[in-house]
Length: 313
Length: 281
Image (cartoon, rainbow over all chains, first blue to last red; front, top):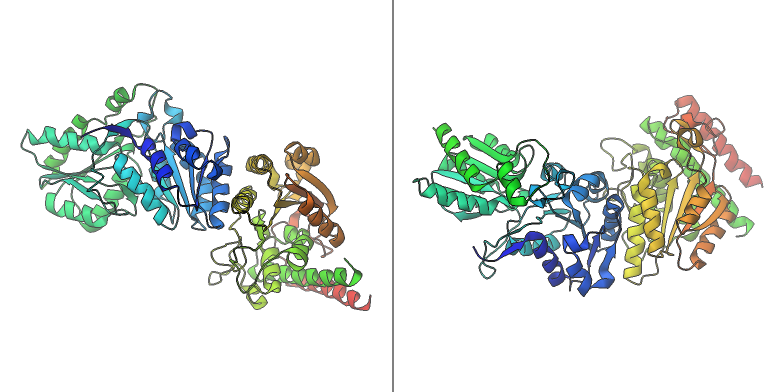
């Protein structure tokens, strides 16, 4: 694990990098310094439009721009993008299947000090439930860059879930290949599979090391596309390892754990433990402290692995 | 506009009104009142002003129209069908499960519909997006929208109006179909939006007051908007809900109620009588 970079940082850089495509228009709701869309703004000021603190309007404006051939990135914090502007996303963007990409930063409790009112822990569940929507939750800077590129190439709405906190870079830009809807096996193992997304992927890798010292070989899978989810990699993991732990920085309802379980119960039932925020609101605090308080550490993943192994036939 | 042109628009609008009645009657649901109140504006836009191509509905340089009060789809569909975007025979399939004529406008399924609407307050924002795209691309197309007077109770309308003025969208013209009634009754009793003129002016719009059923006033407002630089234009169009059908006029009850057979026949008879009257003028 090398340099630590926040996925929002990588998002801003990617927009600036791929912004040479003149179809791209970036909207923000007065948070461009935080969502990092200011990187695009500096390079292409004429195609950056601040919509002010009016997220609902921003999403529908994005739809109008997209209907005229623009590839629109609309950014805000996940809480205001996915949740305040949910119905605009649903009716004005997803229903007509318009080419709007929602860059939703500061997702989860690792937003830290601003506290519960700003910490989106339901956004993946909500976005995943809307037809036509693609949901991506990248794990590091490299994956984020590729996710932005894939979002530009994909014709239709995309929700990009990004974090505030700097996270370890897991992938090597020169060798990484991203395919929308395909998970990545980060480490092999046949005793159990840990399927993680976003911030929790590097925690899963740490958990793997802890488990290895106890003789447990965990397969680690990074699911960057929550929807459409990679059924193949999940079914294969279920068949080959016989037990699964999912890990996400999101409520245990409706997110990655639910998406993986939906695949498992219909195709290849094996025990699954869902690690996430246990249906309660976040709070203010240092991100690392909150990660501990909300049970999102590598040790928490390792503990869950041991529980699921007891259920394994 | 000369007398012949006005007469032609009157005839056209009456054909559209007849379709509205039959759409809502055959669906046994839908919104006749507000559809009839915005018919003359739609007629003037599509049959006198707007640059559209029925053979190429997605033509990049076309003028755009967003029915922000999406529940008045019967009026939009009838206008588009009369214009030639799709067969008028299909109109009686409105709201049927095996039809493309969705209850609220769908740009995915209905040729000529530029934006899917229905959830109030969102259409005007999408029109702002279209106008912004026109500015970014240095295109000379214009964007039109019709809002309901009840609709402006949605806060998003004001967010959109603020953005349109901020970005000096003089390529955007919106109409407020001011019929004074919403589902629960008089808008001034439900939630008064007054003073409407002052509000839009304060939001930085060029405001024009007209009679929503006077073609010359509608057309003049459109021309005035086109020559107004640096500001979007809001045409506050005083209208009569249910216009053209005597028993529907100015009745909140006809907001979202379909006529029965007898009422349908009476409405059609009244509109046919109006058409016959035009012939002998």
